[in-house]
Image (tube, rainbow, N blue to C red):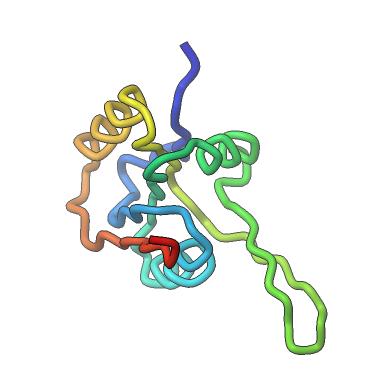
Amino acid sequence: MENIYWKAEGAENEVQCLCLGTGRFLRAVLVPALNHADLSPALIQTRGSSFYKYMKSRSKESSYQVDTVQVSGDITTQDVLCFGGFTLGSADGQNATWEFVNSLSHSVQIIGMGVTEAG
């Protein structure tokens, strides 16, 4: 059976922050700020599986990319560190997520919550 999550090597010893949601605000604003504060975030997608699959495809980088359109119209790409990608969209994903959370060697300091404007 294929792993239904992605985590960076040694993530259990690094992660101190969990983000529920994988939307643009969390990925482009909150996660970079958490990295700057040395809180090493993992992201948990609430329904789908696209984020952890994307992270698995980039696993050697342990980062995801965010494109930003500048005022000038230029597009800049930033690599943002991420220590885990999980899903709550299936029973197996939920189990893998909770196993990871229970394996953390540090207390979770911050839980970031993404709220969609769609509903």
